Length: 311
Length: 225
Image 1 (cartoon, rainbow over the protein chains, first blue to last red):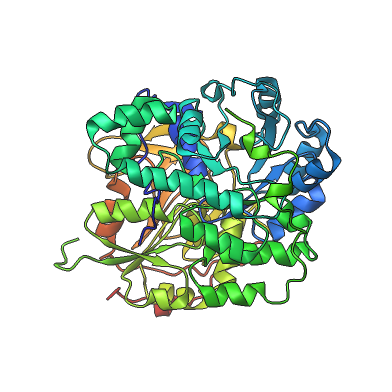
Image 2: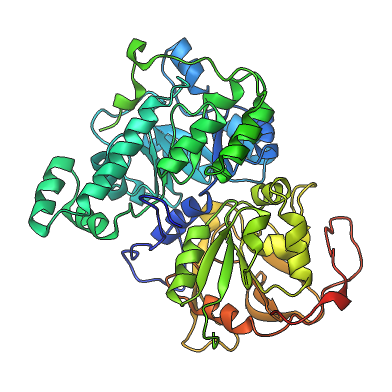
């Protein structure tokens, strides 16, 4: 019943014992991530798009200044969204609201937390603010999601306090190839760790650039201690089905919805395909006559690879 | 769980924390079964409606064709455990929901969505549960709902300052927290034990503007097979 690399939900013990009433714990952060499993998180730039996303069945919306395809096209520095837009989005929907902060830009993250967003994406889609350090995510009450291209990167982000990992893929391209590469790399290495012996795990930790304790933990459990979602290049219902079958637990769709010919129908179809990912007949049904998906880009032709941001 | 054969417990897997419930149930010796389409309802002895986004699940209940057959099974007395979003979907009345949000109307409660605030207000608390042996229950509240009206025949088993958070009527148990996250299976155990209690009354209280249910008639209730 459980797919490869499935997150069966054994939460790692919170570092501290549970006080009588506490907020911002590991369990609450990873718990919210788990509630989004099987769902679709959609990029939106304003309240109107947020409504379209909620109406289509999104489990959460991601507020950002411009969708990745536009960031790619327009260039320049991409930053956290205007707080007024985030407030507008929060007021427009009842589902969780996520928002992006630049890598290492803990002040943007503090602002997002103060605004009451439910999840912060420390994202390579925005222009990095720090070339060596990611945000110390343990210092926040609100949970964080971070992108990763490999198991080592995922474990480094988890050791910094990320409560959810998503593949980076290559945002704004409508090309699924990089997301598939990243998922296969993360899940493949998890499987390989499962057969390593105790001595080999020290070498794995060195090669992954990840804390040995965390490497030993995931070697034992066979899964990441936080949910693994997929992002970066999902443009069709079949893309969603593909990454869910590979072992992602939910999907992020950025430009794929609002750059398509029919955003409400495309959004709804991707929601259906994510839930019923193993039902090819249903994926066929919802894919029928959707119109043009977002225009795609060949990854080899890109000047900037967003996935290379983050360390 | 006195039955010699492990009960088959369906876990609604349209969206949300289905996996976590499945592993909790498996640990207690039950046989979890993912439910995504009507055919999956065949042969289940009970159903868990997990946490997740109630608006998304409500939409998918409709499009998957599960809404109707589920209502029928519930009317026949299918035991249900609803947690967080699952509590919202089980209630007869949803406050602060979307206008088109549907619920199964299994237990006569008015439930308010996101009653405690946003994620930064999510909290863990040790909860005293009526009749639960082994001390307080480590309850995890995530953007949780709260009960604002309790119908006749519904027992309140635990409450916090804002209102009831664990209620039961016969073999229907609902809670606004996440018993699948705390590593403590006593709420699942309580549910499996209550599976043998027939559902007493299907609610048929006064209609209100936000009311979605009930869709079933009281006479229809019978013992679960």
